[in-house]
Image 1 (tube, chains in turn purple, yellow):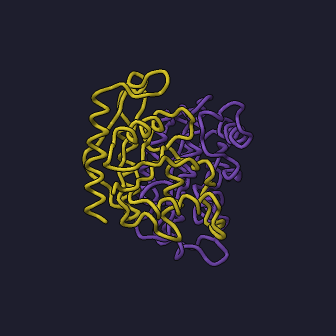
Image 2 (tube, helix red, strand yellow; image 1 turned 180 degrees about the horizontal axis):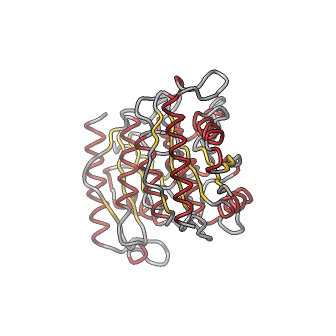
Image 3 (cartoon, each protein chain N blue to C red; image 1 turned 135 degrees about the vertical axis):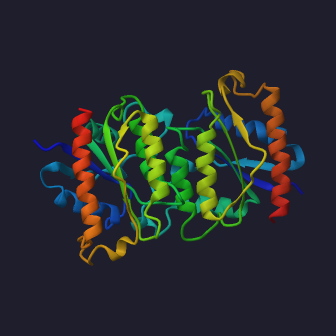
Amino acid sequence: MSPNVLGVAGSLRHDSWNRRLLGALAELAGDDLRLTVYDGLEQIPLFNEDAEEPTPPGVRQLREAVRGADGLLIATPEYNQSMPGVLKNAIDWLSRTEPVLEAKPVAVIGATVGNWGTRLAQAAVRQALTATGAFVMPQPMLFVARANERFDPSGRLHDAEVSSGLRKVAQAFRQWMVTHR
Amino acid sequence: MSPNVLGVAGSLRHDSWNRRLLGALAELAGDDLRLTVYDGLEQIPLFNEDAEEPTPPGVRQLREAVRGADGLLIATPEYNQSMPGVLKNAIDWLSRTEPVLEAKPVAVIGATVGNWGTRLAQAAVRQALTATGAFVMPQPMLFVARANERFDPSGRLHDAEVSSGLRKVAQAFRQWMVTHR
């Protein structure tokens, strides 16, 4: 059976390139994995140690989604040469109380309209996830630059290189999840 | 006249070590600077490009506070080997629409109960701030480890080494603000 993967886009924008990238991967992955894109990141409050109990509903929902998934796939944009605060805030919550990221297989990809393909953002995501005890897949990496040239106006991917990269990520991530089951 | 500095603690916790560190600096700085600790970070929503207009009130308030200050002093904890998402989220908002961080003198310090003094968090803060065009003071750095041993139960600093470090930061930051006025 195909492993069940939770996809999280690091941007809250409705037409985010990273949400589109996850959508493209869901189609291209075939039997390698079943991807469900998470839709409730905007329900997560700012992390505050004074407000951890009772667990905010949006945090409980994300925790349960991560716990129930065989793996987590993060697609991140780059803001100010790092990951978005929104994404780090979610990781901060997930690292507390109940360690749902510990030993969880995670893959990281990212897209941007800029030239550098979210390299610094992905490095930041990998570092923070590694600190949580997640099993972060080291290879293949996928850095999508000039995302606006790779999707058509309706948001569908039409780029052979990125399509091939997504397929390789899906295949390798399937194997990574099997190895770390 | 003493420059007017806005202090921002990267944790929302009421009794945060970094808030206490800013309080200690405010007392120790003497005439080097007047520090006002910002109290509205929890009013800033998660960044969302779809929700930038109209500017959320909490963001407008922080922007005005930064614009009105001669310098910004950030005291950060370390979460998952980086800065808190809460702090990055604020930086993400401040880097948009109106570039209030551009050419703004900024100093970074940090405290933690752990052994490593927020070294990775501060490196992440410096990198993101540099990306915004802020003028980040390179030296002196102040990494406060085992913060719980350095404050008394009422939250007052009683540590000569940290007190001396805070005075040096205040003196150097005054000069940095004069240089970059």
